[in-house]
Each structure stands twice: as structure tokens, then as C-alpha cells.
View 1 (spheres, rainbow, N blue to C red):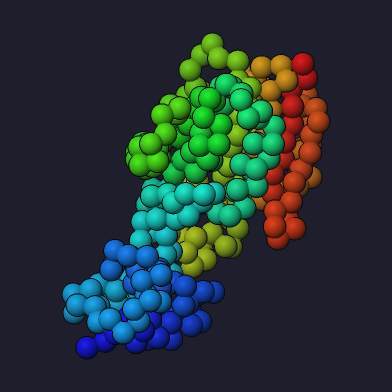
View 2 (spheres, one colour):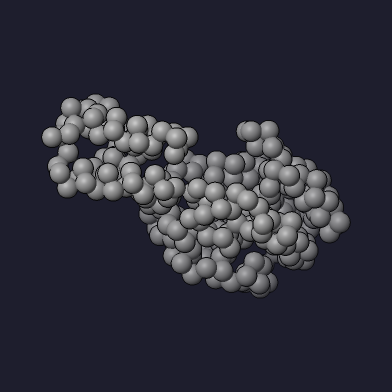
Amino acid sequence: MSTIESLLREATGKLHGHSDSPRLDAELLLAHVLDTGRTTLHTWPERQPSPETEAAFLGLVERRLVGEPVAYLIGRRGFWNFDLDVSPDVLIPRPETELLVEQALARIPADADWPIADLGTGSGAIALALARERPRCTIHAVDRSAAALAVARRNAERLDLHNLHFHQGDWLDALPAGIDWQMIVSNPPYVPEDAPHLAARGVRYEPRAALAAGADGLDDIRRIVPAAWQALAPGGWLLLEHGWDQGEAVPRLLEAAGFREVADYRDLAGHPRVAAGRKPC
């Protein structure tokens, strides 16, 4: 019978050339089918999984070989300081999006009780991070997809977070009326419709509506910026994630709408990634 280590070696060999992290992928998939953590794999490499477990693992490896993302195969992705349930109904959270969370938190006082909107919440990554770090704030998470909202609600329940509300609809149109928003955040679609990497391995499995936005990728941002200006309280902030090549275009849109203190921030790879602007008091 195969051991944990021999299965990992076999899978890693198969995944070479198909993944940037073949050993990590193999460990995540095997830990998933064993319902354990990766530490167990390292501690007891001589253990022999059952034939059923081995078959399930090798089946996942085959799916990974054709490009299906590990996050979808195991139904989970780490973000901020917690794990998220994910499915093909939601975009897989990226590390770059943590920059948006960081910049939002830098502007929210620790004891603030602000109403905050997260537009296009998907799995709930941004909304949940803000809700955990600023428990007195009330986060309103919006998505047009009922399936995505079901994933976000499930994540909120699993993390035992209760300072969130979920709304189905289109951007700010879905938010309740009569609230002077202190902050609006969004990681909207920002990829041009004809971008070649939309057909790349992995990306093609993700919901296209969560990725692409018109010829230049800015269609949704152009809708959000003026609507956010109208919805924000004086002194309120708008923060937007955007593409690496939109670091001039998005701040220009903010400035044209009347936002002040406009700034753009680079991700860990050095790419422009998050734009912020404040409505004057």
C-alpha cells in the first residue's frame, strides 16, 4: 500500500509543470481528503491511507492537472487571519486584496462604530476582515449573486460574526436608504473583457462576472465612483482595488468626481493596486 510520503512524491511529480507550487498543492489536497492538517503529513509520512482515500486524492490531483484551482478542489482559502469557504460561485480571494483591508483599517479608528459598505462581497473576504477587526462597526455586504451571498453568509456564521448585513443587488442600489456611509470599499471586476489571461489555467474556472468589466476593465468602477460620492457622509472614504495598469486611471476618476486626499497604494509585488479618496467635509 502507498504511504503518505509516497503519494505526495507521486502527486508532486505529476504536478511539476502544471503548478507553481506542486508540493504545496499535493499536501493541501491530501490533507483535505484525510480531513487533517498538513502537519500530520509531515509527522506521520509512513502512514498508509485507505484505498478509498488514495483514490479520492488521485482524483483531485487529476482535476488539478487540468487547471482546476486548489481552493475550489478543497473548498477553502486562507485570507487575512482566517479561512474562507469558497466555491466556483465566488472569486478566489487574492493576497493583494489584503492591501485593501489594511488601508481601510488604517482609516477606521479602533473604537469606531461606522456603517461601512462592501460592494461585490463575493465570499465575504473584505467584509469579514473588517467586521473582525472593527467589531463595533456595522458592515453591509452587497453582491448581485444569490449564490455568492450564500457563501458569504456561511463564512460569517462559521466565524461567529454578527455585525454584518447582506444585501442582494447591483452595487449601491442594493444598500438600505437613509444611511450616511463613513466608508465604502470594493474589489470590483476590473479586467478588460478581451484580456488573454481570462482564459488562463485556473482563472477560467472563476466567475467571469466577478473579473471582467468592459473594454478597459473600468466599467464598474465608473459606476461606483459617482454613486459612492452621493452616498458617503462628508469626510467618508472610498477605497477600490484595481488592476496593476490602472494606477493612474482610477485616481483620476476619483479626483474628477470630487474626492480629495486621493492616493494609490502598491501591493507586495510593487504594482499599483488600491486607490483611496475622501469626500470633503
